[in-house]
Image (cartoon, rainbow over all chains, first blue to last red; front, side, top):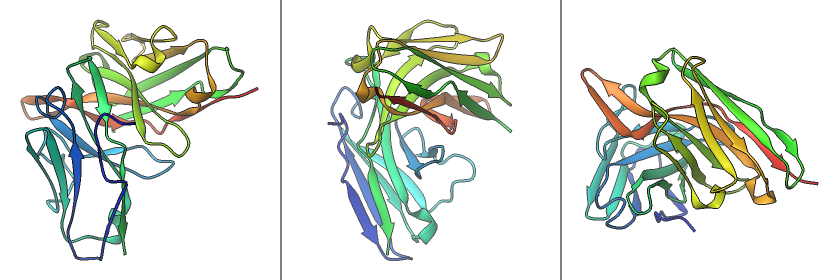
Length: 110
Length: 125
């Protein structure tokens, strides 16, 4: 069982928006920055949000991140079929000293 | 172009050992902290180990404490994962990941911004 809790799956139609939640505690999300990763089986994971709400170069502004207390959210607007993937949240946990990931959310664009 | 390439995976019997390697190129390797992350079949990502840019500190997930050792050789732009006393639940794809995204004059350290494509480790008799 993962330290960070994500819904196993979300789905929406092309063009719509979706949010993926990530729930943690005061020792991880509550006190550290959150990053989000997109992963397709057999490929290298790719960061889509870092520092809780920043997009790396090359990630479209359809992707956004936010945090409130010990929970973080990834938002994706204008969904495209190419957005289908597993999405993972991640952050440092101060107690114990360890990086933690959420269990992952499978995004389906119907 | 920055990249990470893992090697050393394979089939090993329970109780056996394996050493994974990851070589970086296209970036200043000795400036960045490095990690190993794994994904067991049908499961999500699990962080395994961290090593600072200058070798200390190092951290491991509890499941591998006392069995896995992370190390690095900045002269060879490489990070390693020595895996001993392997068990069936260590079966996974093992990814090497660089920690730190630098843009302009600012670096953000709590992010894995570059990943390799992974190397498969299968522990089975």
